[in-house]
Image (cartoon, rainbow, N blue to C red; front, side, top):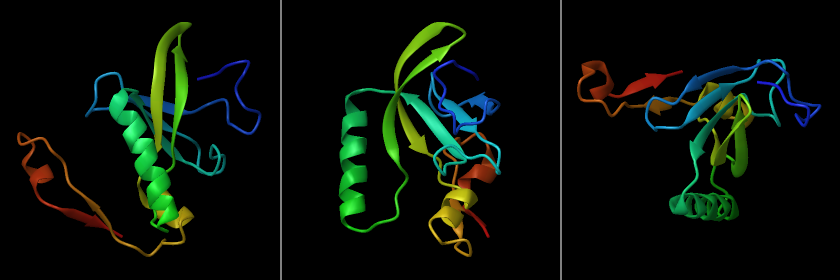
Length: 126
């Protein structure tokens, strides 16, 4: 992932993989020592009308003092092909909790695929 318009504070090498839960979505992981705007993981999903609602809810949550991931909109261009506007959401993981001052907090995760039995039960990390 590299671009001439890439921000100077962003590393020029990141890990990128497809998002398993959303077609056209991506997960971008930055090096721990070189986060992007204090974010280590971001999720990119094709923007739609519901994305506006997600941004509104993020603003509302911040107004209420709730811990919530940052949401914004970005244009994604991959291999010279414009993939359109995507919703950029900070991924909720141990790094997110640490950034919020909640390094000792427990993180609850649960999958949605009924074919993977282990994902049907809560997993608490930390």
